[in-house]
Image 1: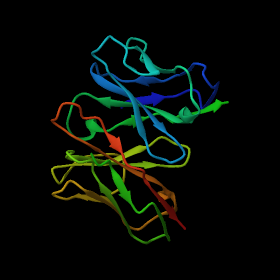
Image 2: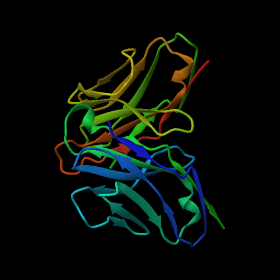
Image 3: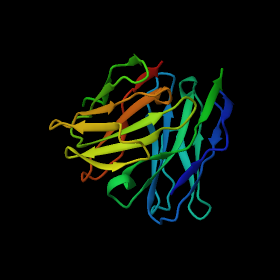
Image 4: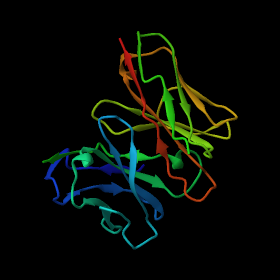
Length: 118
Length: 114
């Protein structure tokens, strides 16, 4: 079974600064997807960024980028120019690329609570 | 494009009762997945529905059951509620077979079991 570990329960950053959230995962599969989701106090889980394991290039979405290290099974999220609206719980998630049944499920880490200080 | 919606927002039940939670998928999506998120934890996969049939299940007992309707909306039913069932229940919709099959989440239903 796959597992996802987020070793930082809480992080804080000053507005306009850069912060990196860590995520490691364990899997025996060679093809999979990795995600970062953001959950603000409103509770809705919002997709931040997605990475396909077969792609060597790191995904980027505006101020958000990832550092995907497949051999190390590491998938960190970098937030540049942090804004007050970035404050939320951030979850790293894994999904198998081998379709069918429960392989389609997302496996989440326990989350990192990000605080942005003005 | 209409996003994923869930109802009700909050629900309070007593132990032993039954509850039904509802989810409307994003337009154009054909799959709904349900997750349970206990306080301070990441979401845990309950099950997934595709083409009106259960298409995968996590480690949850049979008293957790579901339905998917022809319009791809879905229900989660929980029988014989236990105190540990208190959680945020999230549904996520996606499109299997349409290229990107990323799951998009609704705002959740907060269930409290007393």
